[in-house]
Image (cartoon, rainbow, N blue to C red; front, top):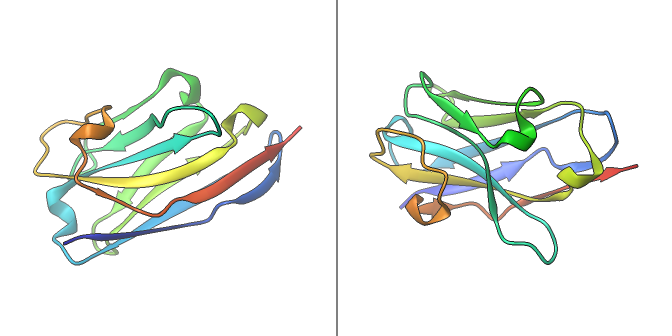
Length: 125
């Protein structure tokens, strides 16, 4: 059983930056593809970014390209999401997720096996 704990969320002004972290425990971190999702009030959970087990392959949704960067440190069992040039529409609860044994980076939440509790990101205009 894998436990995922997100941190780094908060309130930031538009144009600002945040770095989210997700610490994993209870499994072999390097065996997992990792993803970040977000859910705004009244909206469905959406894929933000993902990274394969080695970090050699990443993907992100079009709305964050050029602004968000996903990375991982397998020695620290941690995945990061660096968010720059934040916009009010980035406001959401951000979730970390793990997909066991994935060879690619899925965008569907249904491909992920484990989830964190989420961290709130609020961007003021």
